[in-house]
Amino acid sequence: MASSRAYSLSVPLLLLVIGVCCCISEALPIGHHPVDPTCPPEPAASAAVPSSSSSYGEPEPRRRRCQPPAPHIPVPVFPYDVDPMQFALNLEFTEAEFFLHAAYGVGLDHVAPKLALGGPPPVGARKANLDEVTWRIVAEFALQEVGHIRAIERTVGGIPRPLIDLSARNFARLMDKAFGYRLDPPFDPYVNSLNFMLASYVIPYLGINGYVGTNPIIDGYETKKLLAGLLGVEAAQDAVIRARLFEHLGEAVPPYRNITVAEFTDRVSALRNELGRCGVKDEGLTVPRALGAEGAICTNVLSADRDSLSYARTPAELLSILYLTGDEHVPGGFYPEGGNGRIARSFLAKPHGHGAAHGVPGN
Image (cartoon, rainbow, N blue to C red; front, top):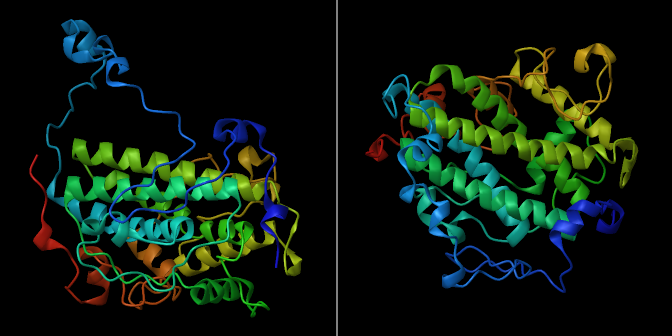
């Protein structure tokens, strides 16, 4: 088993931001967000942000400067915006549960139970053995995903959380499928920081693909603002994961002495392309030079097309990958009973879970 010390990074700038702390509180109070003991003290009420920084007391020209221009189409959410954005909740629920359990040992039901809308708790998720820097990254990602779910539900309404399989056995099955044989011992995402980053490589990137694919088919200005905000953070999360792995590109992944970090990412990306059945829309950390940025480099910190633009995927492609079946009509993998929402259920011809009762909130 690899020690987390072997994976810890020398990142002076990051550690400078983190600062020196005697201990990290990993306890997550039920129904509350955690309080980071290393944060600076909150300013007293008298020392709060001065009112001059607010636009409310400013002259009209300055207020206009700080506000976005009026939308060309003054409709916050079109009816046809709802289903694609609700579909995204399947991945957001998955990321939230994966990161929350890994960092804190509890999930959405303890942090913000109302957001799950009655959906079942995930299967097999557990606390991961993470080094300090990785724990901080994962904990931040976890809390960001809670915000993502809340923002989507507030804007377009919600769907019940689907049944999500985050067990080590499911990740082992995915890795075995990627390599074409059984790894010995079975891959375990929770055993150390490196394994967890490799497992994290699997999911957030698909969220990017989904949001890029959704962008052209929605029109409401509130919906587009929501999508842009989600895409920005999801892309940043994926970049952090890939950069962390890139620093260990040629290193073997213990105890698999002959398999490097680069090969793990290449195999997972190849599997996603195979299951998606729509060509190359996924690339590992190394590529032939012809596929690198401007055909001039074989390193591939970010996955992008020939113009260095993010790839797009349809819901059918995403489900085919996440089900690990290569068929959006056959559930399995991360969603043993299928995804939720009108789009996901339409492939299964099963209407329950579409979230219609939750509707679109008023503006």
